[in-house]
Length: 138
Image (cartoon, rainbow, N blue to C red; front, side, top):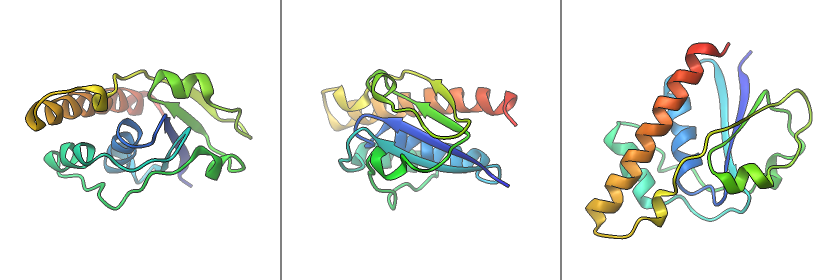
């Protein structure tokens, strides 16, 4: 049986979307992975492009509101931004809450290349954190 993981961020547009795609690619055989935001928006095109650089397609993922998952049990609830950590509700069941704060790449201004580089940097930081977590988790 796969362990259920919910990854949360504010808008479910970048960090949580990239983390969902990465965790699914790294350990989709062990985890059922979902992501949501404290509010739903849309998946950032730079997040899609940064993931394509790693050969992971998240273009079919969509932004979801946290309210879709409030009645579902999860083994792990991971917040990837400080705002989501502060506003994350209590989940039913034995969910272990984990917080990893990553900077918001969508806040970076500049050329498209500079913005994509910011998303790639955050993607790499999320991947490193996920790999470290996977090494010590189930």
